[in-house]
Image (spheres, rainbow, N blue to C red):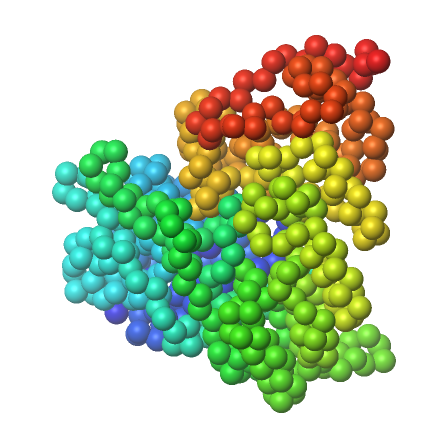
Length: 528
């Protein structure tokens, strides 16, 4: 049996650690069930610095050191694999998750310390790798779903790993390997609803994988069927986003029985009071199931005694919950049923309230859908949490004003994120050359610059640069219509676009073009 060390790298350092890494907790449970010895160091939770990470690496003679995460964890991953190679020369160092799957060839080039990368879903690949280690076999090209180096140092992709058809075969996550009491439960509260703010013992679960929508900003590679292998420029094989044809999708979800029994297990074992569904979109799964999935989850929530009951002091027994929704797929009926079962908050990816922007996104919703769903959710007693983005490729002054108009109708103010072409999204594939231009050809600089989209990194907007987007967002949030109107006059003069014409610089913009905009000629002080 292999000695396995899994390390969860630091991410989102500007915030406290809030979420147990669900995928890593599942892989730990799978490895333990297969008879291997597993330890976890949750660097993101403990945040004790490099000295403690080194002590963990020195603590045993590890057979495999595994890391994973999203792309924004790359900086921490780079540091950890460097230490791991120095301290544990014998260990197999492996990397998986979105950070590797979205760009396997690039990541393996950036991180020569990594022996083998896991592309896509690791539920079958990871235990196969551990069996190979036990057998003394390091011929990774024989293990589907991996990328490794041959004897000449050339990168080799093994055949693509098929997705597992049934999620219910998975064990429950090994939550006990992570610092629940010391870290995660202390950071349970979220500012999404009254119950979310008062939560003391929250855990996250994943009820489904994949999504039927084709949003161009969203990561799909490796979990939803959109990934394909294609010939690379050097004659090898690389991973690509499948944009040819009909956007194939593989939609999978746990049965309601599995989900509710897992929550009941967590309730009995850890005394949880809140569950956050981290699914891409609960409503798309409900639609895909024929409108039975959420109803059955809610019915079983009652049957298993999980429906929350408030105490006079504001605490409760049972488990409140929240997740994600979709503006065009929610119904008044299901929202009411969800609230009665304890749903207190739903995040809506409204993205924009401009019809042209929404159509270009592939979101499958309209501004009217957005507004209707907001009030339907409020009427059901659930808090709707609007998520928005600005800086879309076809963003204009009019689309920004449409957002502000909607905020006034809804009685809210939203701080939008910036449109960011994360690796693994269709935007990244479309705008890769333009991204490289902004980072002087250094792709790793772009990866290190990525955050949670609250700050600007690579800009893919055809009409506005980073400074303009930051300033316009500030003016939007203060409803400063006058300043936006004034700046549009300056912008039009600088770009020679007369009043009355669409405020679009490059209506026929191609992703490989360079957006070198002219120097400003006017300022607010000189605008007439």
